[in-house]
Image (cartoon, rainbow, N blue to C red; front, side):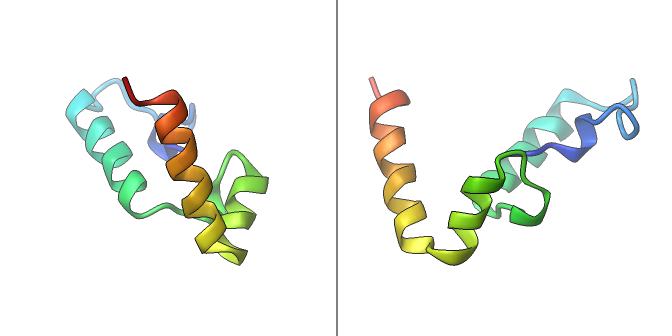
Length: 66
């Protein structure tokens, strides 16, 4: 996930944490693969969405579940 608003050229001290969190939430529901940090993952998202979603579920179970 790439939060463009956190880049040094776009960050403003007046940015509110709520706006940053809202933007992160939006990216989780609507990824922007053309502005990705991990190109390999973005490519999988574009080319093989089914496998991308399988891997995402697997990683969620493995790393984000209690």
